[in-house]
Image (tube, rainbow, N blue to C red):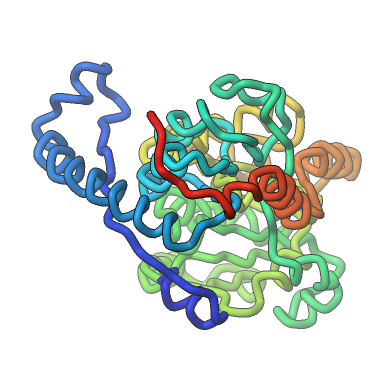
Length: 353
């Protein structure tokens, strides 16, 4: 996908092989390394990582960059190690509060580490190299107006709007809870429900099994919103979402009163993201493992019915947003690149890791 997107913009692209280190997040350190299900794939991917390091060295020698930018994830590890080997400065961007394994390793030698949350939230990096840039968000989010969103989705301004999303892939846990809560939600609010494409048919079937609900016209379900996500968010008074870093950045940018339901099983970093915001009074957090219809309805009703609560949550989450995140991140990269520009005119013979 990246090759297609980058190539379409006329930017040179080169790919490498990379290996993913699989871990059982619920096991001890020794068990993680020797897990029968992950040992074989990890050994195979270790070879890919070595090949990726060699490929990265060749590419960096060919491109002769002044600075390398690493976004995180396993594909960045061989590239970052190659940059270190060739003594090319690099910048890391960590979106989440809890950095992944690749960024924890590469953070030891990074010239700068741009982070998506305030610096005080991080304990795995040297503080002197951290820069709170925030996470870049799509510019079009700020262009959508609430009245435009209400008109697009045929909603009433006099009835509060709840927007629910579990991410592009959907979240069965959230979808099931929202469907079960519809008989109690619809009397006092309108619901835009982004189910995820893989969940849309099942959700619609489950809603049909509820029978002819009063105010069912206040409920709208979509598998995916191609170009109308900004309008849906603009219309929303309250948002229910997972606790991914990009989702949080968008909601902070828009100052939306939010209820987070982090994914405890598949993405432990979401728990940490949600915890930091919750402690700051910026969001309300529900434990998905203990999620009930009653608790969900109670939280929505409490926020919807209390203007002071909405204002408090709006102010709280806004503190975690950086409207100029993309510009600030680019500035960090350019500053490090200028400092390392001399490398462009010197032969990169290599160094020690």
